[in-house]
Length: 192
Image (tube, rainbow, N blue to C red):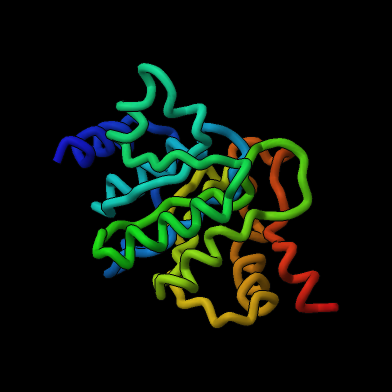
């Protein structure tokens, strides 16, 4: 209730327009992209809260130290040890298989520095749990943010990523110069 109230106030005062698809009917892996600024994360939480989606999110473990830890966990955060990302995927899959019901916000383009590939954890989590993927977006050029389509991944990494790339082709993020093209290393392996 409090989250919806906070998000209602946020959207009433924000210069961003909430647009796009309605909330998915079941728990989903919510892709937050392009992730070009910490404000992208704030917008993704505001979308989820406004649309009544119960979400958790993955964040680097340093965000969960000291006084910030309880706040980050209260906001739905799950700490990620970047030294062992495969463990994180396993832990999230285990939580879902154990009966926890939540949507998961993931920013697969990872850190906002220069890099070539998205992180594939979102893809592996969706495939291993049977959760669909919902494409959340932030587009500075139109000052809109919201949810795009929700769909099941097929397991054909290249085809699934082509669909994701097509959706994000015209989305710029808060800092367009920091945008990373949606591409997974696994696409290279399947093409070889």
